[in-house]
Length: 413
Ligand code: NAP
Image 1 (cartoon, rainbow, N blue to C red):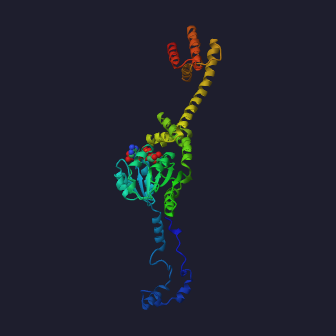
Image 2 (spheres, rainbow, N blue to C red):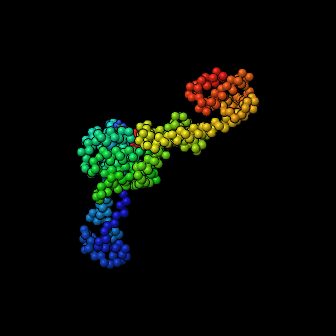
Image 3 (cartoon, rainbow, N blue to C red):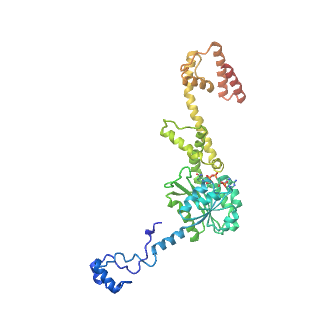
């Protein structure tokens, strides 16, 4: 706490310490000094030279500045109850405790030991927690469990003006839930700290903190309490972004959901670090690390409780398919050229992907960079299979035909 920011109110002017020592010496008389007899004084002056006062305000009867600082500090403190003391709840608790707030916690599992280590008081029973009358209830439960968690809280035990804050990674859902489930006396602040223990284990400087003041009573005390809560993140250097929950969800589907999805897809590939990692590859590995630590419940919540996520997933699917088609299209061109030119078969027909894929594998292995000419009977069966394939591509053949076509291809090879 920057004590130096506090100034004592200008009262009577303080005596200046900058008087020349000669002036002080001239004006000082032995009897002016407390606790020293005039005799002792004059003998000390004789022995060590004249006595000089260097700091006249060093021994004030009380430390005005630190008392004001303490009052300010106490006024900034909040009693915050974290509900859902898992990964993210504990992550937030560290900073809340460090800033001097009184932190209580409750969760489905028993986190007594973890809480004690963090300086948090843990309550197994939500009734005990609410009877402590926290000023703020901070909901840190998983997205999919929040409704159930909220309904188990004995709201009647709380003060009527309690501030409810959620940190869920989706925002429209908790906004509607809190508006419907809480009595109108309670204040509601929907937030999303857009970082976590994986992405920001040490500092939050410059990281976005999104919030919407959904319902804050208009008396000064409530407004001030909400500001105090927001100030927790502002003090840590977060970039404070006031935004509607709907806008948050729209942006988050395009950024956060995609990030988590790609991270999880890459995780399934079990990528490994190599001695020749490029910067791009390093960032992919980091992405996997960042997303792998989050629970699947969290990811599932991003999908289930953000109406924009399904569209993003479909777009991702289309984009991947499109890219694949571009690659296969080029490959078709090359293979067709070699195959049909050599075999004397007409152009303008496409080849089944599986066939092209096998040829590509051979070429990539270096075993058959140039395609060999098919035998006479193979040519006929190949023409037949191509016809089937083209019919299939024209939607003339449905899924059953595809099975038949695949069987023919398998027999051929
Ligand atoms: P999470 O898996 O989303 O949530 C875990 C928390 O939910 C734990 O406290 C857990 O309680 C509780 N929970 C799960 N199922 C429950 C149930 N059936 N009944 C009661 N409680 C249940 O992981 P998280 O990372 O800790 O996230 C917590 C919240 O913070 C989520 O809403 C998430 O969207 C949000 N958030 C997370 C991050 C992040 O980086 N992790 C960042 C921003 C916001 P127990 O542990 O007691 O079982």
